[in-house]
Length: 452
Image 1 (cartoon, rainbow, N blue to C red):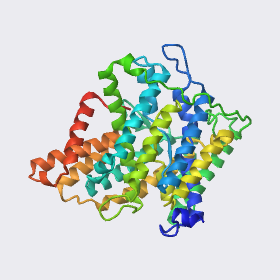
Image 2: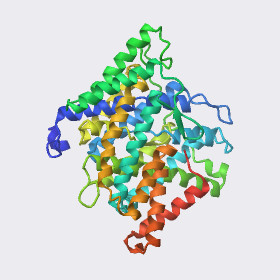
Image 3: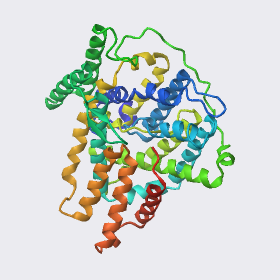
Image 4: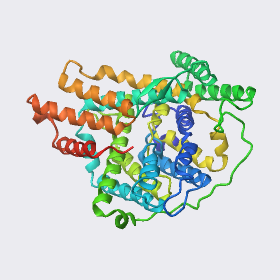
């Protein structure tokens, strides 16, 4: 029955592999259940209203669970959705806490609006057309850039490097800490298992590192991890669904049509190309693209992702988007929607067992992110580096993603440089007309100031 629904054998996978992949993806991204509330909850808007931590946690789990199930059952691909980092901070600290002074319902109304606009672009197949216009070399470079980006996230989460001014990083000041030891041991153990071809190596690595971290934390009087992770849970808060539908389109009158339109377009661009980059990069690494560099059934993936953006706003937990941590499950062998169904069910289960998900510290998933980065870096051999008109845009795409902590920024830099270099070298005809329009929009995006 499962094979008939998800075409598991057709894609060279097994039920066991799909389940393990789903567990790996969930454990790698379960941090969002607690990071999202830590960003959105507690900040009062100009009316004095603030979102509650348990309210945000409940809706984060609910929307992620429902939309990831939709991705698995409707699109049949191993991609998971949850509240996007970067945009949630933009909503909290720019729309609500910044100069715009929007109320929480108004700010979430912006997210609902941009999600609905992207949905229209998907239904008219415009979003699909843009993705089809991207040359294969740039698609591969997006995958490499995501690999570097996800590796950097792992190193930051482990404390090997720390974010400095802006989004630049520097070496950590001290290396004699328990988290770094846990990371190092976890990386070595997981890397050795990967080398030996051990099935479920990434999942085992997460569990091993979590158990190790919990033991270390216990023997140090819970002083190593003070964020609630790496400890056996003792409380089980009941889910609170009161934020459902708590949004408003009143932002049009508060901001004015011009400012409101500019903000919606900026958020839309970030959502539009974050997902495009994530899905294309992960699919390229997993050899799921066809000979023309297209993902079969891509429009279904984009439709679920677009509706996820609107659903996130409707649930007051910011835009839901396809997570780059989905690469963990794909690297573990996940190739079908069954992987996403497992992730979705685990998110829904987190409505009542969220403390268990909270046991996994960031340092336990950091080794997995580094190894996933290794998997995705293998795409570098597919780029023709002897052709500067391809190599330079590819390089910019690859390096700007981790340097600016943004997939969208890397995609934009690659598009603009590809179009301009092609025009200056007499290769303007090879550029799809849509890429000229997209490059112009990205020019406006960078000139106006990036989001997130």
